Figure 1: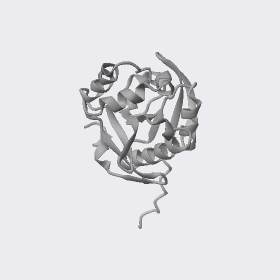
Figure 2: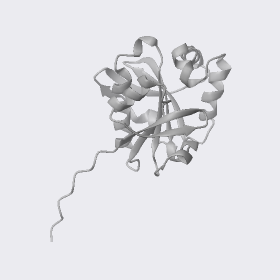
Figure 3: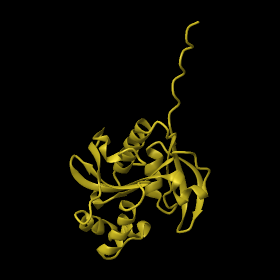
Figure 4: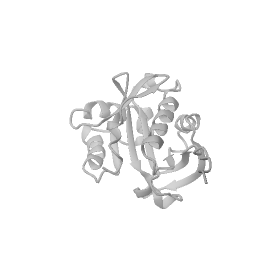
Length: 194
């Protein structure tokens, strides 16, 4: 699998609770995801509002793909509360729009229930997942994202999670802020003996 069994990485402790990714399962998770996609605040940026088939096609394309994008539910203390797409940005059409590096890993995040939004939870989870990606994927030097520049709440969450705005990108479906979180420099190794 291209993303090194991302859902198998286990629980991530965060200040908000125990966070874990679980692979999306269709049709079991479709009603929940469709409800989130039809929330007007979500629909404005994800553009997947409509009947279950609309969301289903979007998710199914990833599930049936080559493993370069993994759709997951985010569970906080066992409760599904977010939708994530973790993807190989260097193998994505996005790579044509920025100076991609091998193994760049991208993230998309949707906080599902309205009660989960506006209280800093996105930043906490983004920081935890970015750290886990960088720890579990040694060949990955950067985690990237490309939220719509109009989505100020999302851009701020990435900033608070340690991402920096690197550029604005004109993508086919939006003007995006390229957000980048780089791996912390590795400590210098002392010189080996004679």
